[in-house]
Image (tube, rainbow, N blue to C red; front, side):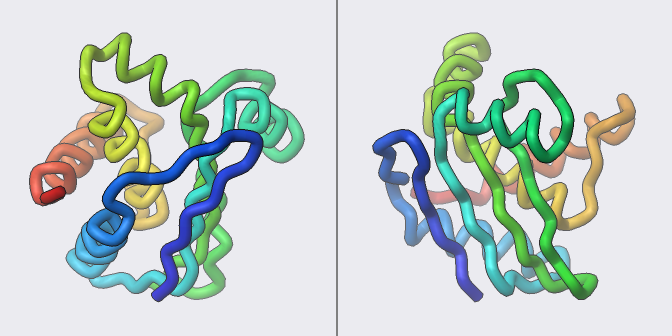
Length: 140
């Protein structure tokens, strides 16, 4: 199991990274899956926007893009890109702390890798419930 944290175009260090790794691993194990290689790349809005345009043909800003590189079902291999600028802005809008919003976004990406979707209203409700459930067991 390898969960790693990187940064592109910004200086950012994740607080409590060891506890967050254990938390993510525990959520994945509950779903009876395994992490092979999971990379979180923290970046700025422009970096993530460029990825969105280049790889997904979406000319929009977003807080997260998850690339599922898994070759076998139940074995997670992925790169998750997160815009720190967008997370900060969303935290202000939602009136939550930066860390709360960052943890929600991180687990949101992981939940996608576990098979959860968020395109329909029902899927969004399920995703939000799974996020809340995961966040409730995060102890820092």
